[in-house]
Amino acid sequence: MYQKGRAWIELDMEHLKHNTEQFRRLLPKDCALMPAVKANAYGHGAVPVSRALQEHGVKSFCVASAAEGIELREAGITGEILVLSYSHPEQFRDLLAYDLTQTVVDGNYAEELHRDGRKFTVHVGVDTGMHRLGERWENIEEIVRIFQFSNLKVTGIYSHLCVSDGITQAERAYTLEQIHHFEHVAEELHRRGFHGFKCHLQGSYGILNYSELCFDYARAGIALYGILSGKSDWVNAAVDLKPVLSLKARVESVKMLYQGESAGYGLTYSAGKNRKIGILSIGYADGVPRNLSNCGYVLCKGKAAPIVGRICMDQMMVDFSGIEQVKAGDEAVLIGKSGELEIRAEDMAQWAGTISNEILSRMGERLERIAVN
Ligand SMILES: *Cc1c(COP(=O)(O)O)cnc(C)c1O
Image (cartoon, rainbow, N blue to C red; front, top):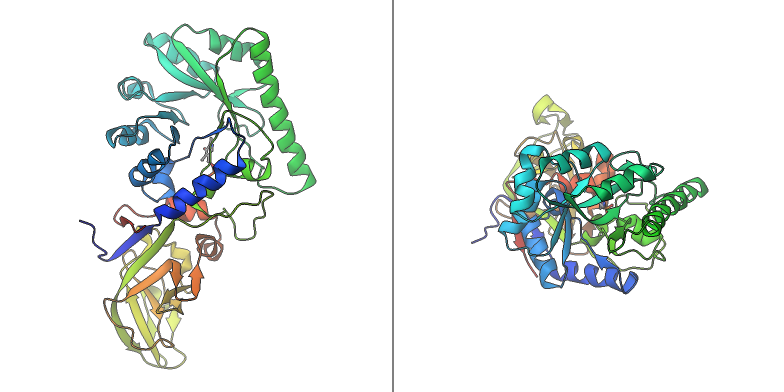
């Protein structure tokens, strides 16, 4: 069924299971994982990843949109699915038809949901300092009003940390304040007689740097896929995380580029001496950042081959001069292992001047996703 045709992703499902277990060991006993499988599970493939997680006993998921939730339902995901952002009134029908839990992004939105007349299951977003989505934590009366709307079934409240990856004194202090604000809102709601709702706050870095916290869910994203956002990121918790994704492409053609010749759009690469050039069947439409042009390398037969010339939409070029016997049809590794060498998503992100979350979530639609383990 699957073909390792021109370019593809290999998913190590054993590593996904291993990472899930690492998180379970780290989290308090009563805290359940609510994996973030938004953006096609950070490019890994929302359906295969969520199915594997469901098999490992995961019962709650979070996604970015109603459409992402529908995709999971249609693939047989039965647990709770939380939509983390705004759904337009045109999508309200889908929230009900597919049993999705909607985020209340602020008080006005709660009112709009209530006025619709149908009954929605929601988690109330609380803004504790990121100032993105959620009703401001100080507006406790407004949060209470949200709880009182008769058409809203509030099953949870949550917030999001914005500097939990930071290690400076100021960043830690800010995070502790966010935690404090969130706990204050939960206590205030309890004091006023609201009970039975779940609380959750931490994403990957919140879990890894503040693992002493004890909430009902932990929304692990990037780290569940076995990598960190940045290559030099440091985290508090001792966890062993293994990358789930490898990115590979075929060698389409191998040819000589003679001394003084240039190659690719804009002729940005020139051969200082005779070079053996490989053309790979992957490009920026597949998620290889165009600013890797003349930057970074791929792996082939256990050796590194520098990227040369501009990344094209469907192709890219590498310098195979140091690699013997490479030919059309061979595999090149853009993320993953080859022999003793490894390129991690964090490496590619660093070369491209971004974080691995962006690299992964932009993996292209036309890549085949293949479970290899
Ligand atoms: C994406 C997201 C997460 C997961 O974040 P990671 O840093 O990838 O673990 C958690 N919560 C919210 C609200 C998000 O948007």
